[in-house]
Length: 263
Image: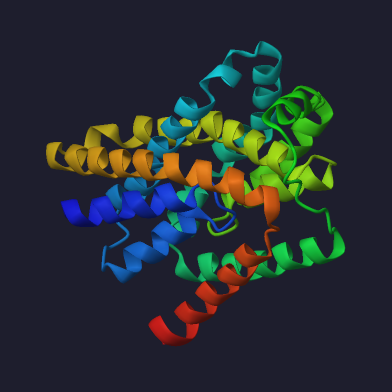
């Protein structure tokens, strides 16, 4: 991997981390297009640069992290993923992360699931909802619902599923409005990605070279800047749109890779 490739992957991470299209899946597919081998460092890079996107969440929503009650609910929602992640970390990194077939099937089936969800659960966007009303609804999320959202998030340990997609759909099934669950998904990403990146760095930091540290910094910085824009855009998008376009996009990406790029 060179500096330009690290920059491009950072941009991909920043764009896709919070959209229901799977950032991990896109990083794996982008690496394939760029001809980057799925080495141990490459897998660590894909996990680490998510911290750039997470830093963007902290910058945008830092005041919400001062709400102790909300913070406790975020921790409760993180518990299922934390337990499952620690249990199957080696399996995921060894056999799933970097597996194009797993990613494409997850993108394809996840796209169908998003479209079906919008068809059978036609909750309309709320363009008139205010930030204050969203804040009040965040405060009303129960610990039971927070745990339920966390269980949905744990499905995304499979590359290509999409952490944000799983939590958003799960939250809406539990009765939350679109923008509210989108914000909660942003906040929940912080402990989730911190844990994933921290665990990977603890296990692999000693093998990272000085030049690779520079590549990590480039990817982190690009992901941070682009994620700031992506967060603002998605919060506006969900006020007036459903997630059907993302479902269609996922299906198209999977089909293009299957029948055009990987044939």
